[in-house]
Amino acid sequence: MKRVKLKIGMTLAICFGMIFTGMAFVQVTADLPEKYALVIGISDYQLIGDLNYCDEDARDFANYFSQKGFCDVRVLVDSRATKFAIQNAITGWLASEVDSNDLVVITFSGHGGNDLPDIDGDEVDGFDEYICPYDTTPGVATSVISDDEFDLYLDTLKSMNIVVILDSCHSGGMAGAPGFTPKGVSAMTGDTAAFAPQFGGQNDCSFASDIFGNGRLILMSCQATQVCWDVPALQNGLFTYYLIQGLTTIAADINVNGRISFEEGFLYADPLVNTYSNNVIGVNQDPQIDDRITGEVETENFTCVSEFVNPIVAFMPVKNYHLGQVNTLLSDIEELLPEEVPEEIQNLLDEAQTHIDNANRTGNSIYANNELLKALKILNEVLSKL
Image (tube, rainbow, N blue to C red; front, side, top):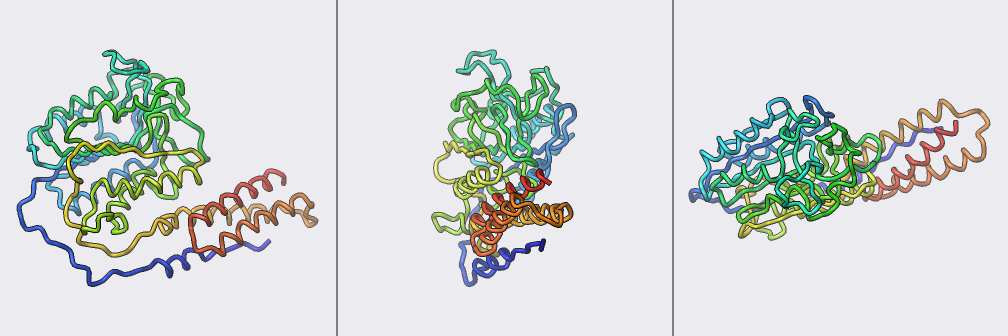
């Protein structure tokens, strides 16, 4: 059997490889409030299940903030992101440095959960949501950071411009496609992903719903009853990948003012996360936003645009990942095929080839990716029959 090599990437590069020149951007010369960022990402946990790309999420956010001229960017990755370190960074460092007009951005990428017994009666479902620092200990409620506790941390800040970006699960786990890691854990039992789906079953009982407040913009990777995902093809959390892409491409500049706000970055990422999660992972991940800051939150003038990133082009790395899987399966099948191929197997191979041909003919990487996924499903069936 001949291995199929697609050329979709070349087609898209030609169609969408636009170069923007002669564009003028306004330069701000007046003094601006200071900008601070606390970036947290935990892939390697001390006592609970590890994740894959949360540390990469943190480094990518840190690079973005540094490029945007933040006066201080603190990064807590893996063993540095203990509960004490996170609390001290907010209630100590930020609380002592930040004024009311300053911009504060806090990002967290790591495990989250929702089965912490509520002790103050503010949860309809009887359980608090939480995020998991590095030293989370199964069965020890005080080792996590509950939504109520995190809200108290934020209350120590004088700033009325606080952005919180959460790329973690706040609900019971679901089963997705093989190779994708959900960012969900039960700190009560230590189980990851498929824990206690009866807990936290209401969308108004999310971690973020308890940290809403005036002067705060909360960007959430999924609904309270959903999980979010680490994605091998993107080398990032799904939400983080498309949010950072939105924050760094002129395609997200909805009001065409030459600057990308966090709100615009979110509106760019939202449909891409939904499309990817539904079509590739097979489990919906629907980002959420709560904005209680007057006007849009911008970091600085958007002055360095090198390329136009179309949502169709944004799917190219995903398509390439699944193309590699198709070729690997074809090689495995080629080695196992008997000289006389059974009619049932041949029919399946013909069906898979049709989907591969469809992917080859299109210039739309989203459609191509869907066709490759159909081919993968059929090829896996063939492999199981050999």
